[in-house]
Amino acid sequence: MELQSRGEMLQAANKELEAFSYSVSHDLRAPLRHIDGYAALLSKAAGEALSDKARRYLQTISDSAKQMGQLIDDLLVFSRMGRQDMLRTTVNLDQLVKTVLHDLRLDLQGRTISWTMHPLPNVSGDPAMLRQVLLNLISNALKFTATRPEAKIEIGAVRRNSGEAEVFVRDNGVGFDMQYVNKLFGVFQRLHRNDEFEGTVIGLANVRRIIHRHGGRTWAEGAPDQGATFYFSLPLARSLR
Image 1 (cartoon, rainbow, N blue to C red):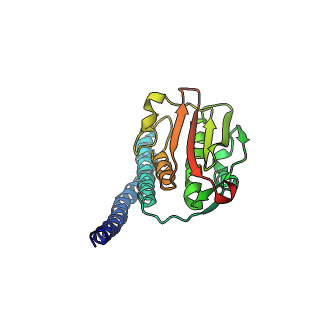
Image 2 (cartoon, rainbow, N blue to C red):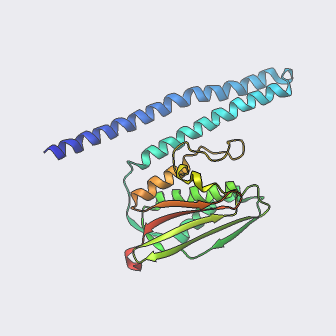
């Protein structure tokens, strides 16, 4: 009886948290739309009277409002990932990578990228959640190789035991110092300045939360200016064990 009561209390608390998240999201979005909208109206109304510096100021206001809106969206996704029901099925990771690369096709335009794709195993998990994992990791690789004349991105997997696969995404980007590796998967943890690489720093926290819900692990290796490799483990589909 006590266990049932606690379960009901937890369920009620989760519903309240979800309602609170939606409310905060709506209440924050309205003033952000006003900031962005009135900055655009002021720019249009003032026209030629504005100096180049004033136009840059207004553009910074508008860009910051948009970035805040994206941050709110990412935080809501992060919040939902902990409560969203999971679908357990066989997931074809090779096909999932192809889908993600198709979704990212606009980000690939104008880039010189050398891809190394190794065969990936079928795993057990939620396809939509695992798509989010691959989208975040491949997007990160694209972002942090943007300064390279030729980006090199490798995607593959290793099997150290019969029950799980370790999938990796490796790049030749700016890398990171291993003494800060514990910060990588935290919310609001940033190892590079925002003016160097844009983003809302929620993506890797989402990766860790999703993989943890699948019973897997996440970790990373890297060195400054020598690239980085991000790993996650997943249970193999039963038919392939």
